[in-house]
Length: 131
Length: 239
Image (cartoon, rainbow over all chains, first blue to last red; front, side):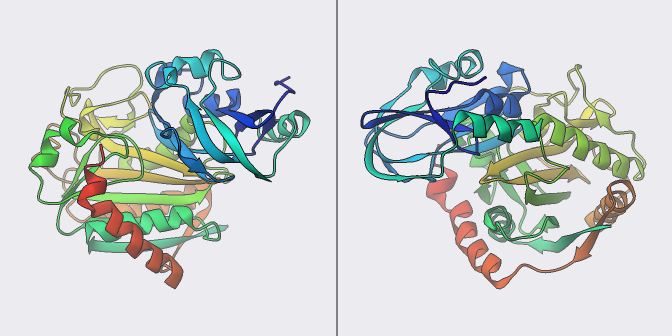
């Protein structure tokens, strides 16, 4: 079972909201789709500058595996206040620990507008359909 | 039998080629679409994340564009480019990226074998065409790449966005000053012949009929915008 302390997007990003700050990352399923268990296949991750304002549903970054570039979508609206700078040089963290050390950005929530978020049960059901 | 749209354009400008692919990726209402095209004038396309300075040919080429798909640079001359835009839910693309390559490349291999070569997935062995530090797609290979005679024969890359995928493929029909030492289809000069071989395999192997069609007005308008960006020097040199 994936963590139940956060919500998910159908496009496989997770968001954990604590007070007015949202921490955002991608799920183990997203990582597996990109690199099929071969963590060396992840080659590049482009994350936003601090201070950038993102809207719910908007692309905030991009990740490249050996054979595909995929968008990273923000589940919430707000200002990027922290970026996990460790990720760009150590993409293996996304395979090792996508839920904690593998967070990508933190966003200060600007409004209540959010994408349609899934709880963990709904996300697990979505994954079960795909597997 | 499933029907896809087929858009063919021979000798079209680099910005049109890239812009239309981008528009088809964005168009959530578009049917699965196969494109076959070639480039006039010839151009060098950089991968989305490539650094301009890490591709020596980029400083020499007459025209340079940046793709929205990843991977290495390709010199588009004497070649067939194909693209597929579709939903990620389509059986050809669902699941891990690697599985989509395996399915698609199996069909491309079958088509190319009808052209007289013996293509196969590279597997674990390095290729004779592998060359370091050129930044060229055909000089770098991975296990899922298609090769024959020990050389890479098909360049490929994907972009995935909002539940859709754009798959790019490049097949060399002749030599290029930058893509040196790679596999070519001997005896074929017309990219339309290779395209037809792919059309037939899609029909026979996957039950997909490629029905000739054209872009919608909205797709063409968006293609113009995205094409301007693809060739804009600021975008080409963004990294």
